[in-house]
Amino acid sequence: MNIYDELYGDSVINYGGLKTKSGYATYREKKIYSEVINFLNNYGANENSRVLEVGCALGFNHDCHVNYIGIEYSKIAVDQAKKRFGTTINIKQDDATDLSFSDKEFDFIFSISVLEHIPRIGEALSEIDRVLKKGGLAYLAPAWNCRIWTVQKLGFQDYSELSLKKKIAKLLIPLRESIIYRFAFAFPFRLIDEIKHLIGLQPCLRYRVLPVNLELIKKFGHVADDDAYIDIDAHSALMFYASKGYEIISHPTLISRLLCRGEEIIIRKL
Image (cartoon, rainbow, N blue to C red; front, side, top):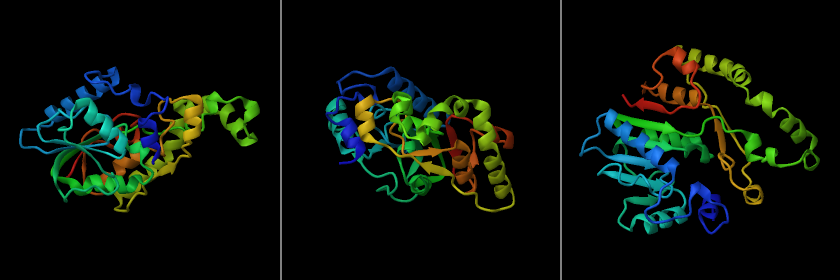
């Protein structure tokens, strides 16, 4: 059983903000649904478009489009979604790093608060590229820049419980959370990637794998991003697709890319 089967299962943790209940939706689900509808409407989805959601969780977006299909890694989440909305909803268990679809099958792909949960993120980004049609668009909105101290639950533990290294890490959290510190740390890497792209070199996909610990989640309770497997900068994902010739719709200029923060990215395959 994977960690997400456990979290979506009979755990005492209210993972995702709700225990499955027919007809009930959280504020967050409604907000995400609105973002999805706006994305599809604003970029010209029609009745013939094919739409894929990568990481459909408990299935709330299943009726966002007539030709929607959602995939979810956790079988338990898929089962709960079908109990919630009925067995005919078009979702299935699948692996984002090895999608069971043909090349260039979808006109629109969206993924919200999902990619940070995939350790092999490069494979997932490549699979999105593979199944997206030429001219197709992707809306990607993971939690960028997930914090290792959130995964380690440093804020929940007393200094006396921690090793010296973790004591120092906890002490420095306010500094490392500051926008100035984060920008100063990220900017040189972003600039290097932009220069590489400009001169025709392939920028590296920069990310860090995080030490997710299910036992800590069970002990201290679930908070946002404590189950994230990677810490990735939005700029690195932008450059991954820019290097493949994509149009970066959400961040079309050098300045907008260098200054991007935690917002979604919207890209078009050319």
